[in-house]
Length: 437
Image 1 (cartoon, helix red, strand yellow):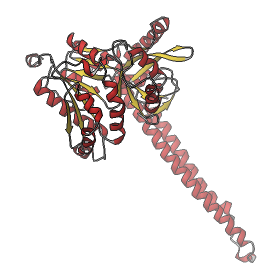
Image 2 (image 1 turned 90 degrees about the vertical axis):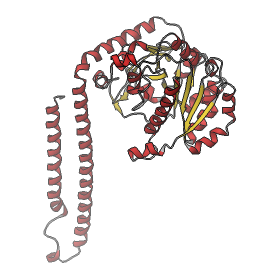
Image 3 (image 1 turned 90 degrees about the horizontal axis):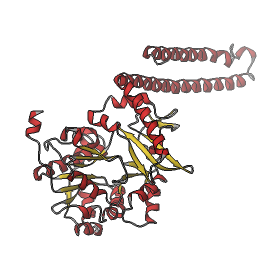
Image 4 (image 1 turned 180 degrees about the vertical axis):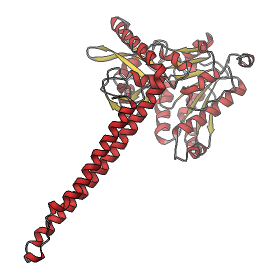
């Protein structure tokens, strides 16, 4: 700890706005929607002199970005750097084509390394973010008050539907309450699956949302989450680089003191949403009666101290004033937070137990497919034998087969039945050992 204090950096006075973007889908959204959204007095125009706008992309997309008139509008406010990276190297590390996470990590590492030399703070934007008016001005204000990291809950919205509705109101950023009100009508299915009492929810929940209703419609959400997006990071330890997604352990490594991390808990202060295609699956879903406290405890077992502290802080996204509905939502969220805290010491065991259950279901499903396939073969054989017997009836009696098709297929059906029964017994024994039945 002593060495960390000795090498702590001074607060930055300039900012790098960082966006990593590639591919037709995201470049189009970024240029046509996100850039006009950011060009407002309370966003890019609120940055101090010496700041810059940096875009990390591929060589193919860099040409389109350089030729875009949209970026000329940004250049009137800030210098724009378009940084070409060979992102195929990130794909080669996993031997998978177009690994989005590895590419994003490579861009963020380069951005953090470049900013470290000039002692700049970083504002991490994504090419599918929509900002409320005053968001970047709020980040600068909170940073100036002493925070070295500013973290936000960026909920997902249905991209096409939201962009269409927003276009009817103009292209520039909306006031926070107006943006939240519009967003609540276009929540992504993934966001809805994390509502506390959702019928279908994630098998790896990192957040829980409590809706505040008005005439049956969602007016706001109270959020508890383990994973927040670091919108602004001014590293205390500038040698710490992202080793994974920046919402994982990066903030803990570069800002070790959690007291210097500011969680935005009221959307009136600033608000951001993320735009995703409606049909995009974010994680595996399961049926159940709401988000499971046990599964949340399993997530908590893999979190660091910073993330556990984030979970304890409720975040309010609202389009109206606070009233007794918010008090009730906070009471319910506090009750769940206490349950998760009680289960958290057993989180690793819970993860193991759910992994075994998942494995057993996969085995059972695979065995079920095999059973149905074999049963289909038996049925085909039986039909073929029936046709053969039917044809044999026209033969002389001494040439007819001594057994019927039913008698011949009975032995095969008995073998399949015994194998299926043995598989079911094995699954039951495994569950008993896990101790969850």
